[in-house]
Length: 101
Image 1 (cartoon, helix red, strand yellow):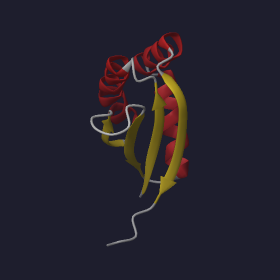
Image 2 (cartoon, rainbow, N blue to C red; image 1 turned 45 degrees about the vertical axis):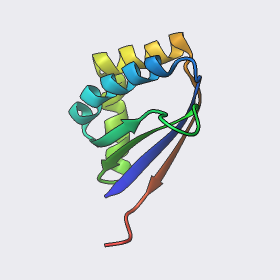
Image 3 (cartoon, rainbow, N blue to C red; image 1 turned 90 degrees about the vertical axis):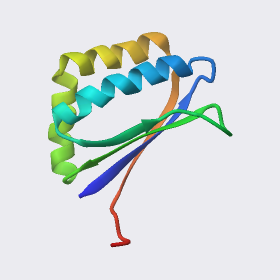
């Protein structure tokens, strides 16, 4: 099992748009094959940093998942929403494995 951490730099004046985006992924991500831990919007401190976190079996499963997400109607709609509204300024993705157990 690996965990994908997505770090977003978002427009601090468009946090509500990011939250709408996150809620849509809350439905689409599990349906497409990943175990969503959650999306996290700014609360205190930085007003521009947000995260999305989910587990997936391995990188091969990740490739299948990404294809499903791209084909999913809500996934496509959410990608378009983000592109159109431009609330995501930067997005970084890293895959980590749990090593503390």
